[in-house]
Amino acid sequence: MLKQTIRKGFTLVEILIVVVILGILAAIVVPQFTNATQDAQAGNIKAQLDTLNNQLELFRARETTHAYPTAADYAAASTSNPAYTTWGTLIDRGYVKAPPVNPVNGSSTVIFSAAGDAAAGWYFDAATNTLKASYFDGDKITPGTP
Image (cartoon, rainbow, N blue to C red; front, side):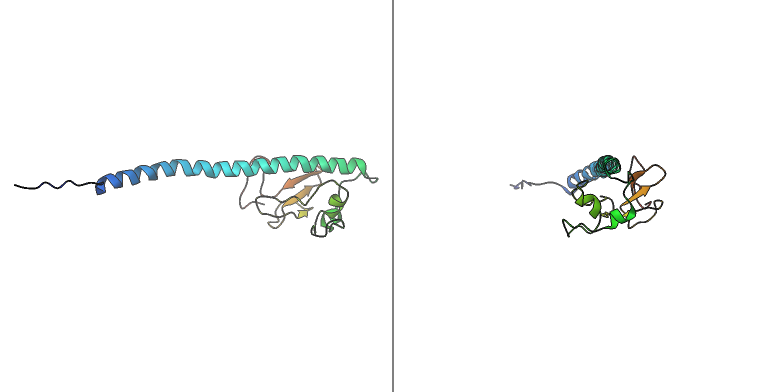
């Protein structure tokens, strides 16, 4: 009599089919997570800009000069918290608690020229008297375009 051996496990073909199906699912799902991350960063920047621009208007209304913060105000170190080497005037007078960091490039530096400095996190647009974010066009993150 011949003994029949019972095999347990999966065949190579079955394993390959499962791997192909998982690859297809990954190709569909991963780009959606990438877009969600950029959307979250864009929402974060929008919220920061709204708050910061409101604080700049408050600064202008409360200060005796009735002017927006100058480059020196942004560049000054905080006297109340020496760990903050930028945004000192606004921190010391209570308009912001800490230098805001642009989530795209991690910088809190403010420049007063047109956008284009990759090291700057923010730039002040004198034409509209608003603070804007580097790498952000108002709706979405623009990698490679400060």
